[in-house]
Image (cartoon, rainbow, N blue to C red):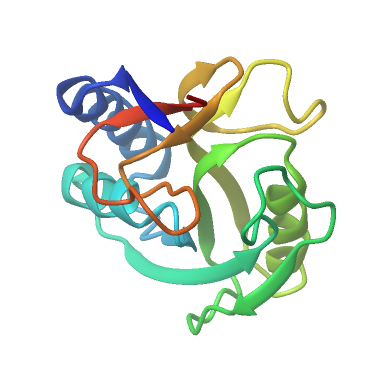
Amino acid sequence: MGLKPYLPPERLEEIVGQIALEMASTLKGANPVLVGVLKGSFVFLADLSRKLGIDHEIDFIQTACYGMRDIPANEVLILRDITAELKGRDVVIVEDIIDRGHTARVLLEHFRTRGAKSIRLCTLLKRKDGAPGLHVDFVGEEIGEGFVIGYGMDYKEQYRNLPGLYLLEDG
């Protein structure tokens, strides 16, 4: 397996800053709950939180749909739920990457049943032509094919610590 550089840390910092500005403008005065989808979003969410510039809470939800395989599964399981009260609150689901949108759709419905005032979707990366019909409020970068690792994203629980994003290559 080889690693091909995709987005360096400096570019990620710019992307996160742009998302933070847009989100702060949209949610000013709302004190939203940012819900990071574990494990992949934890680095992105930490950087986003520091740059956001508005009051907010953070919580985490852990889902499983990749496991130890290379391709997405169709079923999404919630392994660890949030503890925050959502009734009447503005919620932002923070994802690392949206491929086909299965996890995002499940979480949107999951939080709707909790009485959230509004639910927005934020992702660092979104596949071009991925997740048709799914509205994503804050998108960092649209990407093509390839398995992305680093900046919190993994391959078989490895590479999360890399400061930039890389494409995993065979060979």
